[in-house]
Length: 261
Image 1 (cartoon, rainbow, N blue to C red):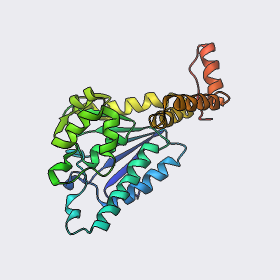
Image 2 (image 1 turned 30 degrees about the horizontal axis):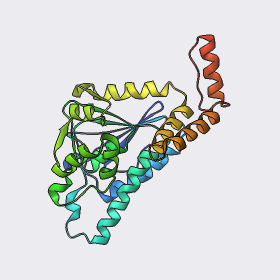
Image 3 (image 1 turned 180 degrees about the vertical axis):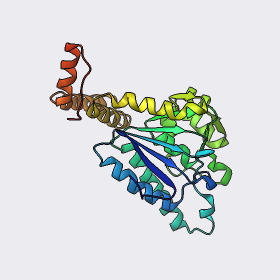
Protein backbone atom coordinates (compact mmCIF):
# COMPACT_ATOMS: atom_id res chain seq x y z
CA UNK A 1 0.00 0.00 0.00
CA UNK A 2 1.79 3.08 -1.23
CA UNK A 3 1.10 6.61 -2.35
CA UNK A 4 -1.09 7.82 0.51
CA UNK A 5 1.21 10.46 2.01
CA UNK A 6 4.71 11.88 2.12
CA UNK A 7 4.38 12.06 5.91
CA UNK A 8 3.88 8.37 6.62
CA UNK A 9 4.58 5.02 5.03
CA UNK A 10 2.52 1.83 5.03
CA UNK A 11 4.21 -1.55 4.80
CA UNK A 12 2.77 -5.04 4.78
CA UNK A 13 4.09 -8.05 6.70
CA UNK A 14 1.68 -10.89 6.04
CA UNK A 15 -1.65 -9.92 7.60
CA UNK A 16 -0.07 -6.98 9.44
CA UNK A 17 -0.07 -3.39 8.16
CA UNK A 18 2.55 -1.09 9.66
CA UNK A 19 1.91 2.66 9.39
CA UNK A 20 5.03 4.66 10.27
CA UNK A 21 4.99 8.43 10.67
CA UNK A 22 8.04 9.85 8.86
CA UNK A 23 7.89 13.63 9.27
CA UNK A 24 10.96 13.56 11.47
CA UNK A 25 11.93 17.21 10.98
CA UNK A 26 8.68 18.17 12.74
CA UNK A 27 8.73 15.27 15.22
CA UNK A 28 5.95 13.68 13.15
CA UNK A 29 3.56 16.51 14.02
CA UNK A 30 0.11 16.28 12.47
CA UNK A 31 -1.18 18.82 9.97
CA UNK A 32 -4.30 18.97 7.81
CA UNK A 33 -2.75 17.21 4.77
CA UNK A 34 -1.57 14.36 7.01
CA UNK A 35 -5.04 14.00 8.54
CA UNK A 36 -6.62 13.89 5.07
CA UNK A 37 -4.12 11.25 3.97
CA UNK A 38 -4.71 9.24 7.14
CA UNK A 39 -8.45 9.16 6.48
CA UNK A 40 -7.83 7.72 3.01
CA UNK A 41 -5.27 5.20 4.25
CA UNK A 42 -7.32 4.02 7.23
CA UNK A 43 -10.44 3.67 5.10
CA UNK A 44 -8.50 1.46 2.68
CA UNK A 45 -7.11 -0.64 5.54
CA UNK A 46 -10.55 -1.08 7.08
CA UNK A 47 -11.87 -2.39 3.74
CA UNK A 48 -8.96 -4.80 3.14
CA UNK A 49 -9.95 -8.34 4.22
CA UNK A 50 -6.33 -9.48 4.12
CA UNK A 51 -5.24 -7.09 6.89
CA UNK A 52 -5.81 -8.45 10.39
CA UNK A 53 -3.89 -5.98 12.57
CA UNK A 54 -2.64 -2.40 12.16
CA UNK A 55 0.52 -1.22 13.93
CA UNK A 56 1.10 2.54 14.32
CA UNK A 57 4.61 3.82 15.08
CA UNK A 58 6.95 6.72 14.39
CA UNK A 59 10.39 7.29 12.97
CA UNK A 60 13.05 9.19 14.89
CA UNK A 61 12.61 10.78 18.31
CA UNK A 62 8.82 10.87 18.30
CA UNK A 63 5.80 8.68 17.84
CA UNK A 64 3.77 11.83 17.13
CA UNK A 65 4.55 15.04 19.00
CA UNK A 66 1.07 16.53 18.56
CA UNK A 67 -0.40 18.95 16.05
CA UNK A 68 1.83 21.16 13.95
CA UNK A 69 1.45 24.39 15.95
CA UNK A 70 3.01 26.49 13.19
CA UNK A 71 -0.24 25.94 11.30
CA UNK A 72 -2.19 27.70 14.06
CA UNK A 73 -0.69 31.10 13.25
CA UNK A 74 -3.27 33.46 11.68
CA UNK A 75 -5.82 30.62 11.44
CA UNK A 76 -9.43 31.80 11.67
CA UNK A 77 -11.77 30.26 14.21
CA UNK A 78 -13.63 28.54 11.36
CA UNK A 79 -10.38 27.05 10.06
CA UNK A 80 -9.35 26.00 13.56
CA UNK A 81 -12.66 24.22 14.22
CA UNK A 82 -12.50 22.49 10.83
CA UNK A 83 -8.99 21.23 11.65
CA UNK A 84 -10.24 19.85 14.97
CA UNK A 85 -13.17 18.14 13.23
CA UNK A 86 -10.78 16.61 10.70
CA UNK A 87 -8.63 15.21 13.51
CA UNK A 88 -11.67 13.84 15.29
CA UNK A 89 -12.64 11.89 12.17
CA UNK A 90 -9.20 10.24 12.20
CA UNK A 91 -9.29 9.33 15.89
CA UNK A 92 -12.85 8.03 15.68
CA UNK A 93 -11.95 5.94 12.63
CA UNK A 94 -8.98 4.38 14.44
CA UNK A 95 -11.20 3.53 17.41
CA UNK A 96 -13.87 2.00 15.14
CA UNK A 97 -11.50 0.35 12.67
CA UNK A 98 -12.43 -3.26 11.95
CA UNK A 99 -8.90 -4.41 12.78
CA UNK A 100 -7.22 -4.16 16.20
CA UNK A 101 -4.82 -1.20 16.30
CA UNK A 102 -1.53 -1.46 18.21
CA UNK A 103 0.31 1.76 19.00
CA UNK A 104 4.07 1.11 19.19
CA UNK A 105 5.19 4.26 20.98
CA UNK A 106 8.84 4.89 20.20
CA UNK A 107 9.31 8.40 21.64
CA UNK A 108 7.23 11.50 22.32
CA UNK A 109 3.47 10.91 22.16
CA UNK A 110 2.09 14.35 22.97
CA UNK A 111 -1.17 16.16 22.33
CA UNK A 112 -2.65 14.69 19.18
CA UNK A 113 -0.06 11.92 19.33
CA UNK A 114 -1.26 10.94 22.80
CA UNK A 115 -4.82 11.03 21.44
CA UNK A 116 -3.75 8.50 18.79
CA UNK A 117 -2.54 6.28 21.64
CA UNK A 118 -5.85 6.69 23.47
CA UNK A 119 -7.79 5.71 20.34
CA UNK A 120 -5.68 2.57 19.79
CA UNK A 121 -6.72 -0.80 21.17
CA UNK A 122 -3.37 -1.90 22.62
CA UNK A 123 -0.19 0.02 23.40
CA UNK A 124 3.43 -1.12 23.55
CA UNK A 125 5.89 1.58 24.59
CA UNK A 126 9.65 1.93 24.56
CA UNK A 127 11.24 2.65 27.95
CA UNK A 128 12.24 6.15 26.82
CA UNK A 129 8.75 7.12 25.62
CA UNK A 130 7.09 10.23 27.04
CA UNK A 131 3.34 10.83 26.90
CA UNK A 132 1.19 13.82 27.75
CA UNK A 133 -1.37 16.45 26.86
CA UNK A 134 0.53 19.77 26.96
CA UNK A 135 -2.23 21.94 25.45
CA UNK A 136 -2.77 23.96 28.66
CA UNK A 137 0.75 25.34 28.18
CA UNK A 138 -0.56 26.99 25.00
CA UNK A 139 -3.84 28.20 26.47
CA UNK A 140 -5.69 25.44 24.65
CA UNK A 141 -7.29 22.05 25.32
CA UNK A 142 -7.08 18.73 23.48
CA UNK A 143 -9.50 18.57 20.56
CA UNK A 144 -9.20 14.95 19.46
CA UNK A 145 -10.87 13.24 22.39
CA UNK A 146 -8.15 13.64 25.02
CA UNK A 147 -10.43 15.18 27.65
CA UNK A 148 -12.95 12.34 27.19
CA UNK A 149 -11.03 9.16 26.36
CA UNK A 150 -8.41 9.73 29.06
CA UNK A 151 -10.79 9.87 32.08
CA UNK A 152 -12.68 6.86 30.74
CA UNK A 153 -9.39 4.99 30.73
CA UNK A 154 -7.68 6.15 33.94
CA UNK A 155 -10.39 7.83 36.03
CA UNK A 156 -11.58 11.38 36.58
CA UNK A 157 -9.09 12.87 39.02
CA UNK A 158 -5.88 11.56 37.47
CA UNK A 159 -7.07 12.71 34.06
CA UNK A 160 -7.76 16.17 35.45
CA UNK A 161 -4.26 16.25 36.91
CA UNK A 162 -2.62 15.42 33.58
CA UNK A 163 -4.80 17.93 31.73
CA UNK A 164 -4.38 20.77 34.22
CA UNK A 165 -0.65 20.38 34.84
CA UNK A 166 0.17 19.48 31.22
CA UNK A 167 2.91 17.24 32.67
CA UNK A 168 4.50 14.45 30.69
CA UNK A 169 4.53 10.93 32.08
CA UNK A 170 6.99 8.12 31.48
CA UNK A 171 6.18 4.83 29.79
CA UNK A 172 6.27 3.08 33.18
CA UNK A 173 3.83 5.60 34.67
CA UNK A 174 1.55 5.15 31.67
CA UNK A 175 1.60 1.40 32.22
CA UNK A 176 0.72 1.81 35.90
CA UNK A 177 -2.24 3.99 34.89
CA UNK A 178 -3.48 1.40 32.41
CA UNK A 179 -2.71 3.47 29.29
CA UNK A 180 0.14 1.21 28.15
CA UNK A 181 -0.09 -2.58 28.04
CA UNK A 182 3.64 -3.26 28.21
CA UNK A 183 6.96 -1.41 28.32
CA UNK A 184 10.03 -2.81 26.59
CA UNK A 185 13.65 -1.71 26.01
CA UNK A 186 13.86 0.76 23.13
CA UNK A 187 15.55 -1.68 20.78
CA UNK A 188 12.90 -4.33 21.36
CA UNK A 189 9.87 -2.18 20.52
CA UNK A 190 9.31 -3.36 16.92
CA UNK A 191 9.67 -7.04 17.77
CA UNK A 192 7.39 -6.69 20.82
CA UNK A 193 4.67 -4.98 18.78
CA UNK A 194 4.91 -7.61 16.04
CA UNK A 195 4.86 -10.45 18.58
CA UNK A 196 1.64 -9.07 20.09
CA UNK A 197 0.11 -8.69 16.62
CA UNK A 198 1.10 -12.26 15.74
CA UNK A 199 -0.63 -13.60 18.85
CA UNK A 200 -3.83 -11.80 17.88
CA UNK A 201 -3.62 -13.10 14.31
CA UNK A 202 -3.70 -16.67 15.61
CA UNK A 203 -7.20 -16.10 16.99
CA UNK A 204 -10.50 -16.18 15.12
CA UNK A 205 -10.77 -12.88 13.18
CA UNK A 206 -14.51 -12.42 13.66
CA UNK A 207 -14.21 -13.01 17.42
CA UNK A 208 -11.37 -10.47 17.64
CA UNK A 209 -13.32 -7.87 15.68
CA UNK A 210 -16.46 -8.37 17.77
CA UNK A 211 -14.47 -8.22 21.02
CA UNK A 212 -13.17 -4.80 20.02
CA UNK A 213 -16.64 -3.58 19.10
CA UNK A 214 -18.27 -4.98 22.22
CA UNK A 215 -15.81 -3.37 24.62
CA UNK A 216 -16.06 0.00 22.87
CA UNK A 217 -19.86 -0.04 22.66
CA UNK A 218 -20.36 -1.62 26.06
CA UNK A 219 -18.43 1.10 27.88
CA UNK A 220 -20.95 3.64 26.60
CA UNK A 221 -23.99 1.58 27.69
CA UNK A 222 -25.51 0.40 30.96
CA UNK A 223 -24.29 -2.99 32.18
CA UNK A 224 -27.56 -4.83 31.41
CA UNK A 225 -27.64 -3.33 27.90
CA UNK A 226 -23.98 -4.19 27.33
CA UNK A 227 -24.48 -7.80 28.44
CA UNK A 228 -27.46 -8.07 26.09
CA UNK A 229 -25.17 -6.87 23.27
CA UNK A 230 -22.63 -9.48 24.33
CA UNK A 231 -25.21 -12.27 24.23
CA UNK A 232 -26.34 -11.21 20.77
CA UNK A 233 -22.83 -11.14 19.33
CA UNK A 234 -21.94 -14.47 20.91
CA UNK A 235 -25.04 -16.02 19.34
CA UNK A 236 -24.04 -14.47 16.01
CA UNK A 237 -20.60 -16.09 16.22
CA UNK A 238 -21.79 -19.57 17.20
CA UNK A 239 -22.93 -20.76 13.74
CA UNK A 240 -19.89 -19.36 11.92
CA UNK A 241 -17.40 -21.71 10.29
CA UNK A 242 -14.62 -20.39 12.54
CA UNK A 243 -16.57 -21.15 15.72
CA UNK A 244 -17.32 -24.65 14.58
CA UNK A 245 -13.68 -25.13 13.62
CA UNK A 246 -12.51 -23.81 16.98
CA UNK A 247 -14.81 -26.18 18.87
CA UNK A 248 -13.76 -29.14 16.72
CA UNK A 249 -10.07 -28.31 17.08
CA UNK A 250 -10.41 -28.12 20.87
CA UNK A 251 -12.12 -31.51 21.04
CA UNK A 252 -9.63 -33.06 18.61
CA UNK A 253 -6.67 -31.46 20.43
CA UNK A 254 -5.23 -29.79 17.34
CA UNK A 255 -4.50 -26.18 16.30
CA UNK A 256 -7.52 -24.43 14.83
CA UNK A 257 -7.40 -23.18 11.26
CA UNK A 258 -9.46 -19.98 11.21
CA UNK A 259 -10.54 -18.36 7.93
CA UNK A 260 -12.59 -15.39 9.05
CA UNK A 261 -15.92 -16.96 8.10
